[in-house]
Image 1 (cartoon, rainbow, N blue to C red):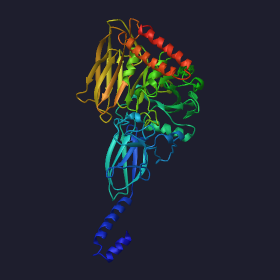
Image 2 (image 1 turned 90 degrees about the horizontal axis):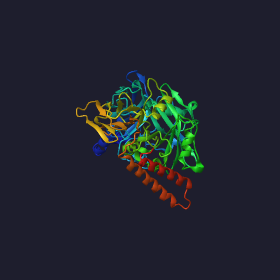
Image 3 (image 1 turned 90 degrees about the vertical axis):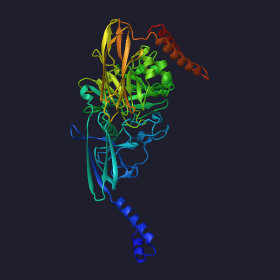
Image 4 (image 1 turned 120 degrees about the horizontal axis):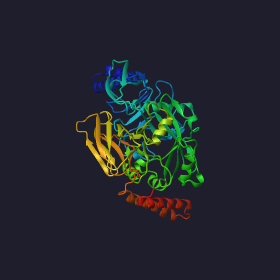
Length: 552
């Protein structure tokens, strides 16, 4: 460009247009080359403590996302291959995590799981990507208009701030104090993710997951060793209390997603050892029995939220003769209440849980299981609370249901004609999601639905409910941006009779039998039908035949 200017001065008349164009190029080049150091400090406002967080830094002028420390344009989002090898955390203040896609359709091997569809990963996050930062870092930027978005789990108000970097700037300091809109631990409720994957065979890998748990404000992350008939991935170094990783009120616990076959993906939490039977891989009950040798273990079905990976048929078969503690009611921005209510109406007691399926999910805790542990937190107390059904699932708002002071998972023993005082409180923040309506539901359907016409941050429902028969009850809250929460059930035992809907259960049992017959026909078409599967189908069919007659 200097040579161009030299020639311009010598031949100014003939090359006037070239000179003007070159001068413009030089001005733009100089502005772009003039880097400004942007120092960013993120703290939890109440304590002033620097905290890891998830961020996205965007140049508004060109719409591109930039990453620390050198201000590189964000590369393509990672999904999910690098996570099989493991992500290394570094204590370098300018370390950043992988780019995670938060918007747009994905494919099976794309940048985001197809399960999200067109939905954003987080209803309250409107940037295309996010990445993890230390909370105290620098990024080189150039003059222009910029935006930073900051997310620290759904109990903190997310930040979205725009600012101008001037050509005269050399160092710009931006500080963000993240404000809580709710403190669930203070109320005895702690968040967890029942379904995540990452190797931990190196200290840097463990540090990455602990830092991510802090960045997303998740208190218990369950890392699952994931199997198939041949082998397992994301191998745990061990299971049980000796292998839990805890720091203050955050823990990583190791479980399994295994078996993963024709009849759904099974999750084992708080287990003593990996349970596998590759010789009889579709005989899930064998694995269940092994897992339950530790009485505190939990067994659940993954992907219930979107009826994926064979879960519908698998539940029909194995819920009939094995205890199922929980299902992933919410996952990847989806929720499946229809099947959940069916099982409650048939008399099953199954806790509501949620898991991200990270790294297929965009980030841990993008939907989370919130469990009541009482006045203090431990992994053991959290697992006991989930096993008892003291939970709600959410991707934004908080939700509390009580009946005569009892919380989800508990029983109330009543006489016919007696009443119970029901109280529901839904809480959100406009930046998380404006509450649209709150519902109370029982076996008969929606009992109460209340719109939030005044756009309040909190909606409270109370009613005196007269009990005619044994029943269950749940609550849900829906926000205008798609954020929602749903509780596990409270159970009303009237005159000592089981919670079984006499009107609906027979038809629902018949529905399960039709699923079983579909599996039976498929199995019999095989060259060598599996007798063990056929026997299990017979057992399940008989179970539902008895259930149709009210025998449990």
